[in-house]
Length: 303
Image (cartoon, rainbow, N blue to C red):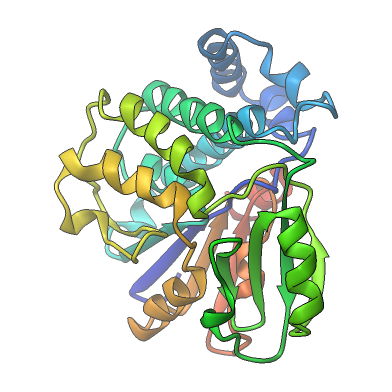
């Protein structure tokens, strides 16, 4: 780490896999204890659940499962790079669920409270789940997309990079949209709810009612939210629950988040989460260095 400005990115839903944490559980007693603690908190066996192909991709399960594994990576990362990071300016951001991982990194809630909050989020978002009704598509494109083509039936859910966006909505309207708008390659996503759209407002309200009961601490680092690129350091901790509730139904402005970091002369990016995903959205440049911290192998490479 040679550059003063460092960015740490945190992966969201869709990165989950059945073997998350297995090698770490076998190697470190405290990790085994964390998984046991997590099972007690959630009321189900975490390892058996993530190895169940019918459950691991369900929102109410995948979100806490991703958080548990990522929390282990975060704690290892922070401990291993503590001295190295002490004189660096850290810039954090997470993609959708990843925002909660960034908040955990930033000491906003302890592990148990954050796991409970993430579980509430997953259950709240699952209330809108209906794979027969809703759909999402990633669009790979080489052209700038006019936001005016979207309406109350088809929503712009994620702006991941200049070459990829994600749309969502009711399936019938999505199919009509595809026919009318030949703007790139449409890739269907294996999800059952219209994440990050106005269709998630009921989920947002359910989440907010519960989230307001948590005792948040102020963020220790600069941390950009998906919603309006708000920096958590610039808002009151009492408003964190509202920020997170709004994030559920608002567009993930990931491309602008990355641009913000690059303008700040960030040249070194780390990604923490089950799979390397977000580093792929960064612009290709010899000046930008990327480091995945996602697997047992990655840990052994750096620690």
